[in-house]
Length: 423
Ligand code: IMP
Image (tube, rainbow, N blue to C red):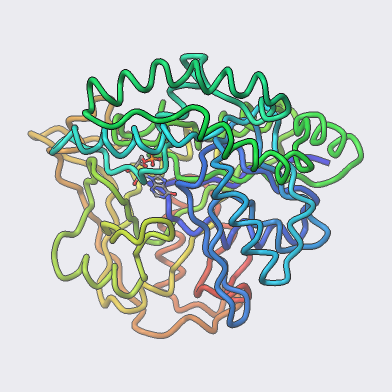
């Protein structure tokens, strides 16, 4: 049976958690393929709100195996705390599998993330300060420490010492910080090893066997297309590939296994951190979106910047990911706005861009070209069938389909699991 990719089609925070939760119900495996605890997924089940940052949403279903793939970076302290948190809620985390090849986020990564941001001053990226960038930097400079290194305490200690030889110079001489002690760090991480190693596996092999045995695999992206290190608004991006190609690399499976790519897009758009954002609303309208949409980060609590839906960016996401269907979330939030706008192009110095501009400076200077659409002025949160949506709401969705060439297969109209319309 094939695998399906679910990914963010915007700047993250599209509501992928609830989408993954929806598809996890009919999946045997749910795989996180990149990122780390910079991500945050909030899932609402009855009166319980569950915030997950590393463990895939599939953990909520007893039939489902949650997998952290090799494309992820793992902060073991955070992961263990999260396993304990879900266990405390009566959810069994014992099925969790962690790729032996995933890289570890070390204390010096967190430290460097914080100080490097501080030194960037006005140019800072606005990272989550979870050590994500420095951990991926070490991975690509081939000085990273992997989950499998925890198997051998001798080698592990050596690798921490070698890493700190270099990092301590950086911390003390460049960033004016105190040096870190390799012994203390190794002791701490080796204590985590006992807790983590029973979950460590060759997750690529696990998925290969699952797919051969006709089991369903869901590949869950964190962040979003416009935060992709290759295809996003660099350098205001994360350090991994949330796009569809990253799903294959990060899970360790081939393209032939994929039967669909579901792009999750909010009915409007938001971003946290700095970087260009053509349709940002810096006025009362934007403030209302933040308040009505509860647009505050799951991980850092930061206020998200909000704006009208951007179809130039969405068409780009369809292209770079090969999105086969869209899942539009939070349509209910737009019920509060009597008039709606959607950006269909950008304009700068008389030049019109209907494709995402090759040169990023355009994103800073452009003026979005909007189409006005009618609002529906009614509560849609109890609607469960597409045909019961107000005409204007259907027109809004059909406008998206027309301009992206992709079907909107699902729409969410509230945070609860059942507040969902499938077509
Ligand atoms: P980092 O991933 O912590 O390095 O942060 C890099 C950029 O990605 C910053 O702009 C963050 O705000 C953003 N970012 C990271 N994770 C998420 C996420 O899960 N949702 C939205 N933005 C994120």
